Amino acid sequence: MRFMILVKANKDSEAGVLPNERALSAMGKFNEELAKAGVLLAAEGLQASSKGARVRFSGSKRTVIDGPFAETKELIAGFWLWQVKSKEEAIEWLKRAPFEDGFEVEIRQVFEADDFGPALTPEVRKQEERLRAEASARAKKGR
Image: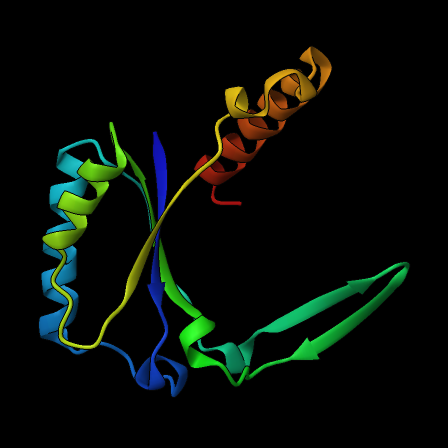
């Protein structure tokens, strides 16, 4: 099972305040534990919403809304992608994360191909597998 671990933004992350050396070191150590255990698939921090944009879809109309976005509690400051056996295992790992008071982190299971049942036809499944392989190959090349 794969889980996306979503680190919620706060006023500091939205203000562009970067973690200090102690926090970065502690998180690096935690990420190393995840990697050694074969859990870590990806881990990234995100820039403040002031550097982002949203695209709103309405029929054929596309509206671009530049950041920053007002609702900090709804924003994501970073994420992990973990491979674990269960949601409970993901929770146990997350409890060990070196966050300070006030952080909120969400755990969401990633859909797997089999979750879509017969709607995922063999043709669509094959296309999905090909696209994942191409994306993986590009990532290994650095783009």
